[in-house]
Image (cartoon, rainbow, N blue to C red; front, side):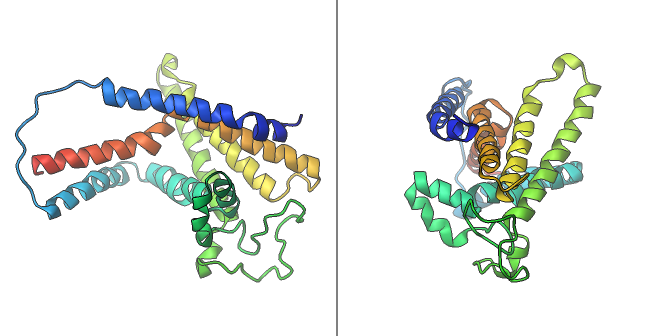
Length: 262
């Protein structure tokens, strides 16, 4: 059994089980292991004030981050998350096909699919190294129009790889300036896995290092397996903070601001 078959047929259910178990543990901590404090008497506020409280809860931390660490914001939040991982994960044509297989209603997003390159959106194992279009300068016809020059798998993957690499390189000097006993392997594991996922996904899409079917399946298997490992450890890493804790925390903060009339 090769790594592709192992990752597709043997690891899917354990990945889901461990992820759900981890999520249950983390969410249970939020719901049941918090300290209750005396509640003040809240004043009544208008609907407009409620909306403004929600906007403030999300905008103020982002603005503070931009002013304090501009380069970290650009590489971490903008390149890595908003322009890299998020659109690749949820809108790349390959991934929409995958999501739709396990959750058919997801196919409704097919019109928004981002092609793998600006010149080809082929979803076939047998295609040669990109570009596969017979007219290399003919752009793929997608809903994104001219934005396809940027909104394609090649460009977004490179952007995400740059953002992830910067975050890794940024963490090493920071951690080694501190007490070595405070260095946590988890600080690097998730980013290293993410970088491996991005690089192997890019290589598989371009049939690198060769277009041989066995090599392709091996690279694709590495891409899938590293993705599964990241999903399994996600609830126990700092990525959990951005994916879940951040949104839960900000919604709760907006609720508190609304009730206090701030």
